[in-house]
Every structure is written in structure tokens, then in C-alpha cells.
Amino acid sequence: ETGVTQSPTHLIKTRGQQVTLRCSSQSGHNTVSWYQQALGQGPQFIFQYYREEENGRGNFPPRFSGLQFPNYSSELNVNALELDDSALYLCASSLVREESTDTQYFGPGTRLTVL
Amino acid sequence: KQEVTQIPAALSVPEGENLVLNCSFTDSAIYNLQWFRQDPGKGLTSLLLIQSSQREQTSGRLNASLDKSSGRSTLYIAASQPGDSATYLCAVRPATSGTYKYIFGTGTRLKVLA
Image 1 (spheres, helix red, strand yellow):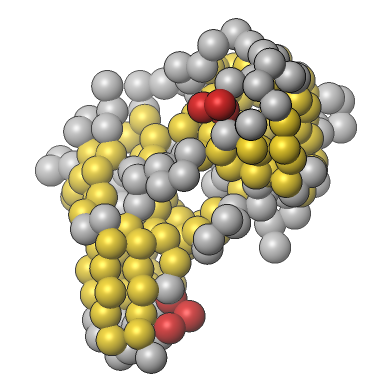
Image 2 (tube, chains in turn green, red):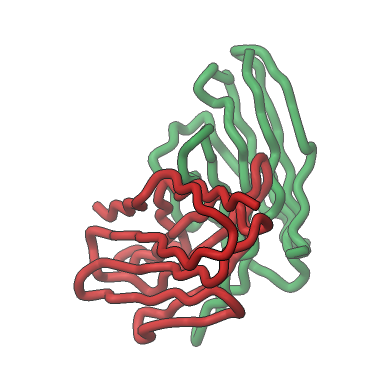
């Protein structure tokens, strides 16, 4: 049990719709990262938020956006859903300090199906 | 561009066998390497984290080694059990990026037969 929670567990949407996925970080963690994991693949980095600012982005289009809130919970928003967006979406939280970096703790994921 | 490869893609062994999972990466400039376990449809559980200055880490029946210069890591599982059946993912944190992100391999699907 990592202390990182995600909601919802499963979600079904149709092409063109918008979706919001939520993540609650482990207590005290100031950094959250989002990953997309297609079936049979390893997770792909989408973006990261550090103290409510985007702090790096992978090779994903702008219709993937996010927010991090003062309590360090986070949202991943995806607009204009496409069939290829069907995947397991994972968030991971960590405590990043100047002198060291803790490991990332992953949540259980949200399974998104786009029809 | 950092790429991570895992061999084999799938492995089926009888209970009790010792086994080795392999991971290779193309850029040796990494902060650390981490091995994860993933059960079907579930999130990731961190097994072992090896910092770039370390050669190996051990936890119970698991031992992971890191040879940064050759871009290789191995995960050794001793006396395998059916409960070890899962997908094992290797991931590296690039040192060339200011972002705390991991680059993952595609995993090795392990099945341990009772």
C-alpha cells in the first residue's frame, strides 16, 4: 500500500469526449507524475508537476493537460478522446528535495476505455 | 534518446527455479535504475532501487545488479514461487533531464508453475 490513490478505477468514454482523472498523492509529497500504459507496453511519461507547476513533459499532445493543487492532489485532463487513448493511466508521487530525491510511489491506476 | 529493453519478453518456469531477468539501456547517464512488479491490471510496486553509484541491491529473494558502463541490469529471483508470477518492469531515471521521470522497458511476463 503506497498511499497514492486514484479515481475512478475504470472509465468508459466515447471518441471526442473529455475525461478527468484524479490522483491523491502520498502525504508530504510535492511532486506528481502521470504515465500512460498501453496494453502490453511499459508506462510512458506524460508530464510532471512540482509545487503546482508543470516541470517536464513527454511526447504527448496539448490535449493532455494537468493540474496540481495546494494539497498536492492532481488531475489529468484529456480532451477530444481518441481510440488510442485507451490505456491504464498511472500517477506517481515523490518528495523532491534539493539534496536528495525519494523514490516514486505509484497508484493503482485508472483504466480508460475509449469506444 | 534513452531506450530500455527487457529480455526475455515472457518466461515460464517450474516452481523452485532460480531465474534472471535482463534489462539494457542505451545511455549510461542515469541517476538510478528501478525494478518494479506489476500484477495484471494493477499499478506498480517498487522492488529494488539502485543508485548510479551502487552495483547491487538485495531484498529477500531478490537481487538486482547494475553495470552502468555497459548499460545493463539483471534481476535475480531465487527459489521462485507461484506468487512471483507477474510482469517485471525495469526503469531508468535519466541524468540528462531535470525532470524526475522514468523511462520504462516493456517488461518480462513471468509465470511460475506450481
